[in-house]
Structures are given as C-alpha cells and as structure tokens.
Image (cartoon, rainbow, N blue to C red; front, side, top):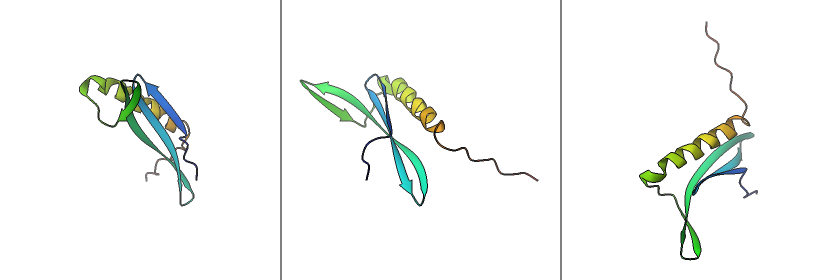
Length: 81
C-alpha cells in the first residue's frame, strides 16, 4: 500500500494534499486540506480555517482541481437524440 501523496500544493500556510485511490480497477483522486501554523518551535496543523485564510484555501483547492483535471480521463458527454 502506498501511503505517499500523489501531489501537494502549498499556498501560504494552506496545504492541499492529493491522494490517488485505486478501487475496483479505477483510479480516483481525493484531496485533504490543512492549515499549518507554528506554536513556539513546533509546527502544528489543523483542518479549521478562519475567514482570513479562506482566499488561500480557495486558491489551493482550485490548483488541486486543475492538477487532478490534467490527470483524470475526461468522461464523454452522453449522446443526445
């Protein structure tokens, strides 16, 4: 089992971690997001976001979406009659 992320995106103190999941012969990506901060000499992380970091969170999620979109096959639109 591979526990390494497929990719990480950092925007300021925000980190979007992209994971590749294999299930039933299909590859799907998922994303976890966290905020990194320092307390004394130690770095901590949280999944709680104050309003002031929401623009960076948004940017990180957009970049993660773009990274995944470049790697996932596109699904053809259904045919219309």
